[in-house]
Image 1 (tube, rainbow, N blue to C red):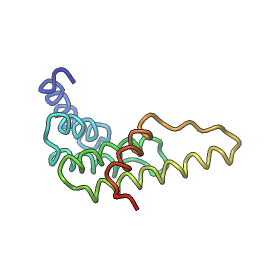
Image 2: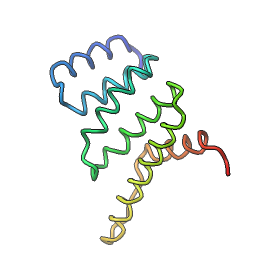
Image 3: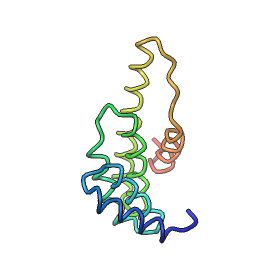
Image 4: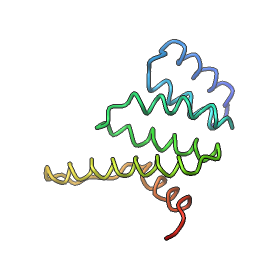
Length: 124
């Protein structure tokens, strides 16, 4: 977060070298969001989410990033929808772990996503 211009340059370079990489798309989208270019970030973050396997634990954080970009670009409804998808998918993953006798631990992003959803979604 200290040198966003350098981060943007590196992320753009990575995306150019790996045009089909979801990780490169997520990184570029995240840096664009932090750089104050939320509308540009949405496209890259959508691309990143589309490349992640539906069962991957990384899908949730990608959706959380996308929801933040939607909110920052005044697309509250899409942000809410994206957060609900992320948290619903997470609950399915946690339930699968419990069904196998495991003790699931929610990822770091999930608390922030829940707080964001409560803030964005009208009460009722």
